[in-house]
Length: 354
Image (cartoon, rainbow, N blue to C red; front, side, top):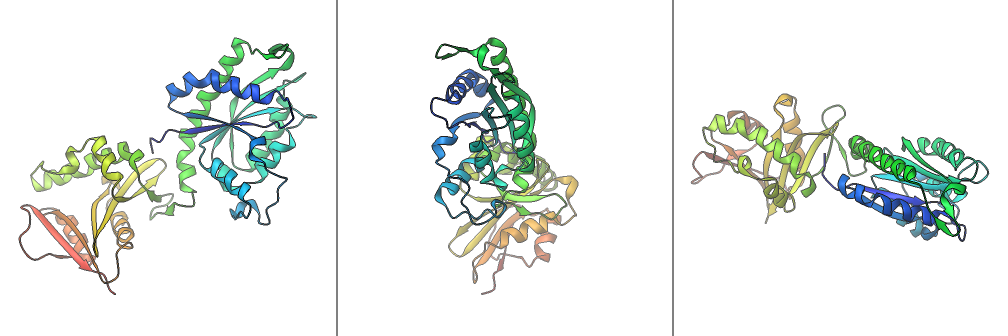
């Protein structure tokens, strides 16, 4: 799984002038700032009122992801970039505000498989009936409510014009964030699998996506696992993939086009490509040992080859004693390149039909 710093959106619902919501949002983010730093997450405060969303005015159903209005596209980008949510909501007539319901209704896939927690405020019930109402809606959007909540009874936390929550409220907020972050990490594979940029993989439940610098830790582990076998077969430790640090891997992940195959948060395989003139260079084709022989390597190779330029060629290399690799490449149409080659290495290529 990626080590990208998760983003938690703190969504302030009320748009009523002089509402208590903005003060609750500020208290929450200030209180949780040390915990957010410790947990490695980013807290972003967002007021629904600042979005300037009219009542839902899109022609297409939100599940389509087709948005014609700029305010919808802006809201979509904000929600799509978040990994979890804390909703700060008052209670209006035993329910959540219409502004919150409207903001939820605007979007569809952007919400899916992300955790949501609630901080409510009100009088008799401290806003808890609004939370129960909201949970019915968010589950329909495939948001996942966490159990921890914060409920502020206005009579207990407001002194004059000041919001003064008690220590127990701060403790509850810290518990909410901790649970939300754990859920965000656990749900990440489900979010990635259903992301529009993900491609269905060759194994049940697998999917492919582009890898980036934030995936360096997983890629480092995969390389050490796969190229140790290559080292044994070729009787050499002079294999760059065995010696690269996570920082080294992070650097080349920024320069190459790299595809990773995932399932349930596990990196199953990868391949990288880079173009030089009309040549497409393919490298670091790797599959975890327990899944070899199932066509995963062939699938990744074909995926990489799809980026080749017509009339050009695809170039790759492997160890001279890596007979399994050589057999795979020959079956796919690769032939050794003529001329001198590095000792212990076989360079191969195949043309791409015009």
